[in-house]
Image 1 (spheres, rainbow, N blue to C red):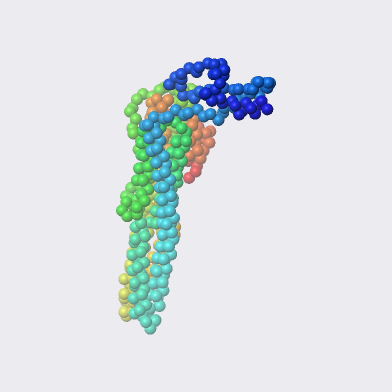
Image 2: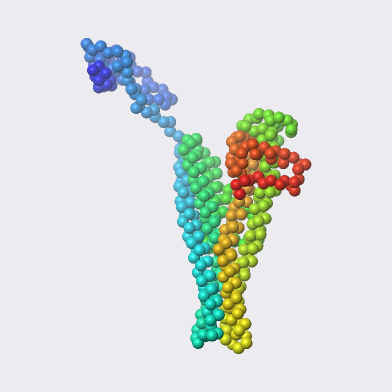
Length: 424
């Protein structure tokens, strides 16, 4: 009973009885620098009621302490990061939709072009013995010309490669969105440098994987094969003498931020292996695939065009027999070449190899950016960075220690046999 009455009456109004007001000392004025709210309450217990201290305990956990407002510049930077995260989510959705559309192009155009070519070849074979030879000959010629033009257009845009670009772009945009939202949720003070870094990543992704088809499409048959770059270029650090970790060959010396001499040697050896083996391997295979795809892209329309030209001479004496064979064989070969190129998705394979080379190039630049930073306290945490590199390469932390010996100048690039990455 005493506890119930205390809960009803524990907050006395400011205009309380004189006895109560006199018993309570006048509160001192609050300092302007205090961020906590002060609660003044009076408790009145009627006479004749015996209550213990436990029954009269007050629960004031519902009173929230006002948060200190952030500076206007920090609030503005935070709003900019939210806008960048929303834009990244929107870009990911757009690339996903367009990627599905262009994958459908690849399947539809492949089957449509092969159907045109094979139907024209059949007409050219039946034309000499058919009563309506002229009609069949003309139909075969029209279908072969249509197939040749369609092949040339499809080989120019490479729908399978376009679909692979959009799939990779979708993954990277979603990664950017997650990282930006994680930075917002972390609650750390946001600066203009954080906003500029996020904006640079947005612009780099837009340049690496453009949405428009024409103009602005990436070159499908470049003269030189380079790794895909979807991250901004780092500003070169000023060359300074880095902090010493002791002589080489000595035991690992604990350093600030988790960096040791052994860890640096390990990353230098890993960097050398990635350059000499992993990235070089993907670029070499990418060049072979590009040359093969370039040859197929020229051969398909050329064969279909030759078959269309031969169909004009069907039924013209002795030359008509050779013309019929050329039209039939040319159409069949054109369909075969088109199937190998687009059914085998040579464009997608080339883009995949170029993206894999870009993946290893980014690991290289991340390692170089940390090793070139003279102040170890400004680097990323050594143990955390080593773990990230190991996860990207599909290796354990103990596996990375074997690359420490690769940092020695006595080891030649030709002597390196093992690849750094195990994922692909």
